Length: 262
View 1 (cartoon, one colour):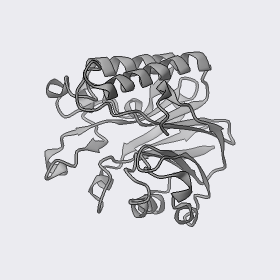
View 2 (cartoon, helix red, strand yellow):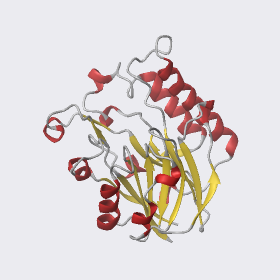
View 3 (tube, helix red, strand yellow):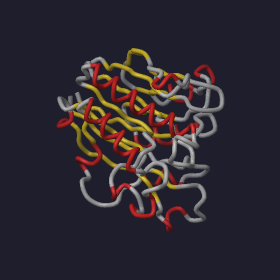
């Protein structure tokens, strides 16, 4: 079985439903994982997606913020969600495909503006969330699993436009990168995107603050596709759909794709 998966922080699934439909109709991934849906589950425009062949959806939602969803052409079973760090946020959903592959869709907290938990509770929550992800992975005996989502960390030097200038900026600080690395190691997770695209600058997010995001190109790779070691070698054809960042009323994130032969 070969299937293509995409992950996208949509920054409001209701506001940007036309963009979701554009992606589904033009790119046709078998599975699309969305983050920051900002909608209760019953308000997600599922009819529009079903009309394009995405008749299966599992989701967790909240009004106005957070929220994760998995849209699928393939049957997918809702196998639950975990409240990492006990925040009470809709930031995780897990589904299992008929071939036994489990997909974990994550929206890790952004962490606020100051990289110091002593003065910024949001940064502390982010670190606690990542620690809980590590412990969950260590205890979970994960196998035949894919983890995707907006992890809100750009771990490598070439995952940001300037490693030196961003070392103290939330999303690229050494403590965040270390926490993410610990979670990855605990679950035997492998970075599918960088396995396919090992060299060079690679981004999936560009700030709304830039007058011309494309020309400035001050991006960060915040959106990730991982797979457990037992299936990581089956992944290929990774790419970032940079063009989506330039669509009308876009999300500040671009979709990230990978294909799996399982």
